[in-house]
Length: 159
Image (cartoon, rainbow, N blue to C red; front, top):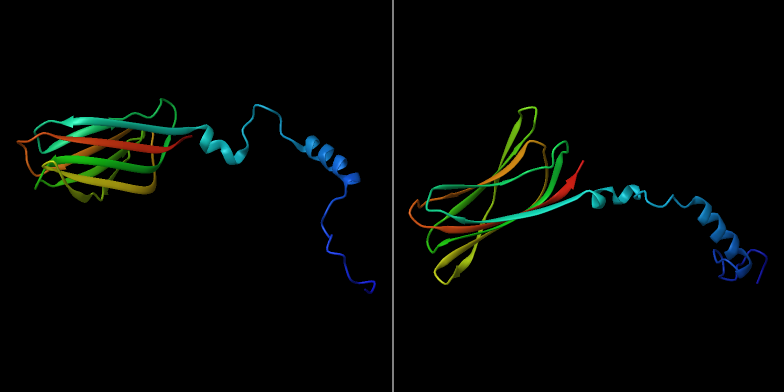
């Protein structure tokens, strides 16, 4: 070996240095009780679901409420809609702000199949939108004479 070759131990810390490194890391550690900046979304997580027996009607509304004084950042929506076989369903999300602005989002529902005489539709959307006034979903159907069922789950965080 010449003077420029290495033994393959580059970057390894010997036992004599480990105690000094631990002490250095301990001095840089953040105070207890404060969340790490990368965990703020998890610390303020929002996860809520609502289900509803849909009455015979063309439209049914399912509402969520953001906590007063906070803005809801919606990142994921999933829904299941069950209606009599042969009936179709659509799903629209409405967001609102205390300033009066609103958003309307048509969410895609996909027929998963027919089970026990009921069509099962599912929607799963990764998105980012905001609400601080209200959050509502409209289940729209093509038959006003039969009941149905819907389950909607919203996930995100509060700011």
